[in-house]
Length: 104
Image 1: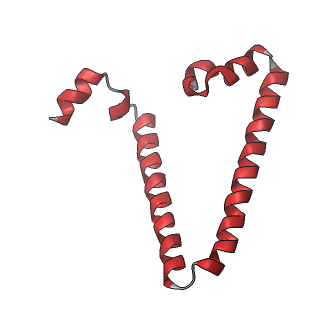
Image 2: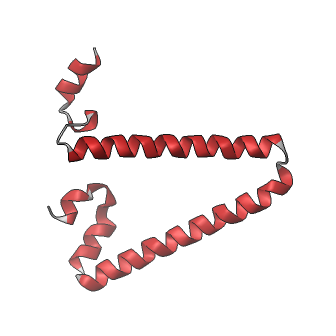
């Protein structure tokens, strides 16, 4: 399977990187990783400073809530991965007519 088929949502930036060859892919990857580093640095800074403003139970509750959402996403991802490995279709992969029939 080609990467362009596997990553249709990446859009024109990914297509441009592919057209530029290996150098384009390396630049795309480096830019993506740099963006992640910047974003998570801002989030990390906010969490570390947020403790000053959200103290006690509110801060702990917020962290527990975020952890619960993260664990739910992990569970969903694991479920979909197992279904994909075992060859089953997920609901998102079914044609829309089948999906509508299954929802009833």
